[in-house]
Length: 102
Image (cartoon, rainbow, N blue to C red):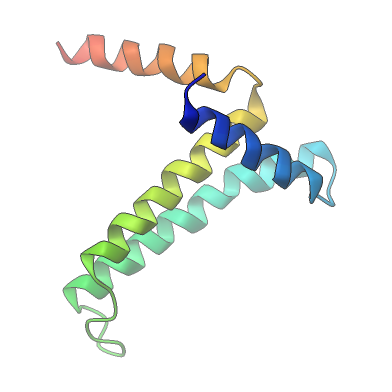
């Protein structure tokens, strides 16, 4: 397991230690959290282009990159919530996607 997945494992454990809900609700909320994070990416892109007339240029492309990272982290934690073997599941899926691209 590389350092990234070790960090995801630590974050997952920390979140589980603070989860007031049932395991089923916790899983559902972690998956739904992805929608929230993707919405923040959209808000940042709109803000970087200055397309919200109320806010103008409210974000930078650095903000967009940071929000995209939040999406990736949230997805990794959601995957870990669904399986303790998240790193292998992800690596196997990534390999299949890569193979299809060739």
